[in-house]
Image 1 (spheres, helix red, strand yellow):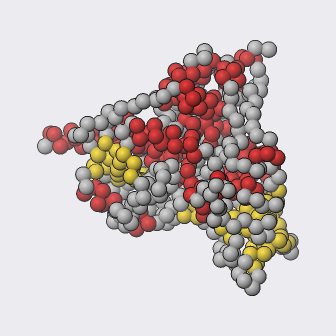
Image 2 (tube, rainbow, N blue to C red):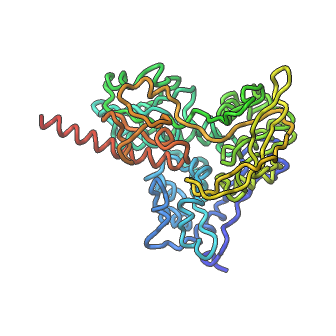
Image 3 (cartoon, rainbow, N blue to C red):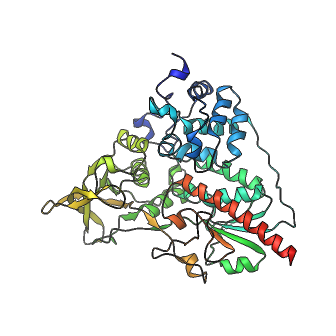
Length: 472
């Protein structure tokens, strides 16, 4: 059977589940050149290319896949980088199955082309076989733009603006750039060396990276605008964890997923015993939620030595928002799932340490605003689980610090920055925003798409203002 008629994707190897729970090395192993070429030949090279419309950063997907099928890996990565400055990141954590691969024509009668795996392959190939070199296209007289936050939205906006010729400064509150990509995603899904290569590439475009600068505390946005920055882009993400609001959340042993994953990444617990972990993990861990962050937290807990990890989710398996492959990986690694259940209280001992969770069983009712069936409590169905550690992974919202120190910046009742349209201009004309700080917690690729749209809008805004100034 020819590659064109092959119905299933070329499978990608991964670490054995019994071995990988003992380490933080990357689980998925990537394609070989031969496997990549074989998979690329499955692409039908559709004229209308619905996959391109399904990509938030507008990659010419058929073009880069055709180059792979011809063995031109350098050409393929060059084609991707015309639109995407973070290909190694997207190839690993972008949910292609709900975007470009969802609308792949091949997917109508067979499995869609493995677009994400192919993107990852050429990004990794470049690291091994090619040294990228960039030169800044800005001049000392180019307008200055400040980008606040070095997550996917900020990195994308900074890179695109630098390519347009602007002098860009990227501000990060912590001591390394990457935002949620560095501090919120585990090493086995997003290796730090892979991320650093992407950050170095963007720095090479001429972006100045300023670390340990908390905008809203160290500096305020009005100060940036007074300091010769013509425009500010805010891409600070969603860093404020949500809690359940039930008794016992203040017990020792109860974490938010934000704190748990940040501690592990920030303090290099994934390099234990080279670095001693500051994260206390009990024998039995429960993680509350059903998204990708839930899967990340559960799988990290196993690797840190938990004997048993239980995921508690208030809906059924079908409604879980996590990526299918992440759920499958967690199941392979031994994570247990308790569906249609929700905590109602955490209980502890006299020393204030967590010992149990009281839960209530649920049933599914009518559809709610999310399009999923609403979970409803079943009276008299309480049960108790013995646990030492709980991680609450039910989402996160906007940190209010920046908005509180920016007069005239309008936000909604949840603290998300209000923008006029998808271009991201805020109530302050010189300030644009995009990503999770606007939409609430979403995907990496959605944040990148917002950063790209904002960069185009900022370019248009500065050009228009420049013409007005000249005419005056």
